[in-house]
Length: 252
View 1 (tube, rainbow, N blue to C red):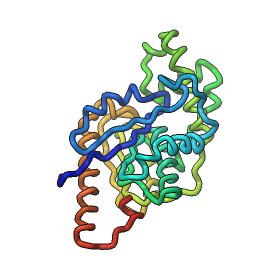
View 2: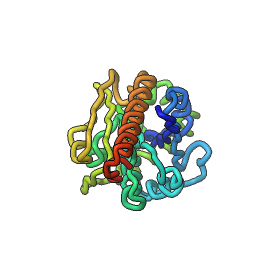
View 3: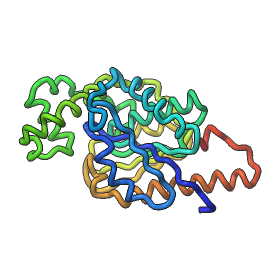
View 4: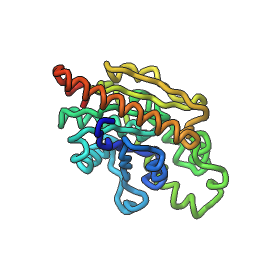
C-alpha cells in the first residue's frame, strides 16, 4: 500500500445500539482501517447523557467530538439510523472544513429523504412497540420476553426511533465523495433516491438476509470497505504524483 497509514472509519451504530455491538468489527479489518465507533448518548458509558432533540443536533455534537479525525483523511460508515446521522455529519465536514469523507459507506438504509421513521404513534403502547421491534428486526422473542433486559434496552431504542421520527431531509444535499451502499436482499429499504446524493460513483452491493444482514457478512463487508478505501487512497496518490490538480471536493 505504499506506506499507507490506517484510515479512520467513523462507524455510526443503528437504533438501540452502541459501541459494544460494533466492538467485534475492529478485528474484521486488516491493514487499512482504524475503526472508530461513535458512542451515542443514553446508553452504555453515556447512559446518563440525554439524547439531543434532533438528528441535526446529535450530528453537531459528534462533529465536534471527532473534529481532529475529520480534519484528515477519513471514511464514514453508518448502518440504518447510523447512515442518516453519518450523512448529516458528512455534510458538516463539507460545510465547515471543506473536507468530505474519502468515501461514504451506508448499510441497511434508505436514502436520507426516505429514512424518517413513520410509526412513532405505535411506540405509545407496549403492544405497538413490540410489534415495531419484531418488524424492525434485531430483537428476538426471547429478548422481548425478558423483562429485565427490555427495561434496559427499550428506552434506548424508543429514544432513537422517536429521534428518527422527527427527521426530514428535503434538500438532498450532495456528498462530494463516492457512495457505497450495502443492502440486505430481503430488507425493505428505498435505495433509488441515493443517486441524487452524489455526482461521483455510486455502487450498490447486495447481501443475503434482511435488515441485520451485517451480522452474517462481517468479513465480506469489512473486505469491501477496506478495498474501496485502498483504491481511493491509491488513486489520490497517483493523481498527486502526476501533478494533476487536486480536487478537494472529490477526494476529501
